[in-house]
Image (cartoon, rainbow, N blue to C red):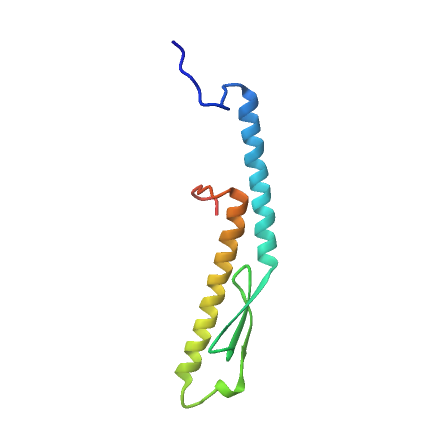
Length: 115
C-alpha cells in the first residue's frame, strides 16, 4: 500500500521549483521593505514634548531637540533621563515597525537568521 501525501503536495519537480520561486520572491520583497524602512525617519518625545528625538530606520540619531525651559543646571539628571527615555522609545519604535512590516512579507514565518 502506498503512503498518501497531504492534499496539494506532490513529488513532482514543479512543486519544488514553485517553492524556490516563492522563497526568492519573499527574499526580494524583504530586501525592498528593509531598504524602505531604513529610509524612514521616526520622531518620538518624552517629558510631554520637552525632548524630541529623530531617528532613522537604521537606528541612527538625526536630531535631539530640547525645549529651553527643561534645561535646569540644578537638575541635569532629569534632562539626561528625558533624553534616554526619548532615545529608547525611538529605538523601540523602529524595531516594532520593522518587525511588523517584515512579518507582512514573511507571513509570520519565523526563520532563524532571516532577520
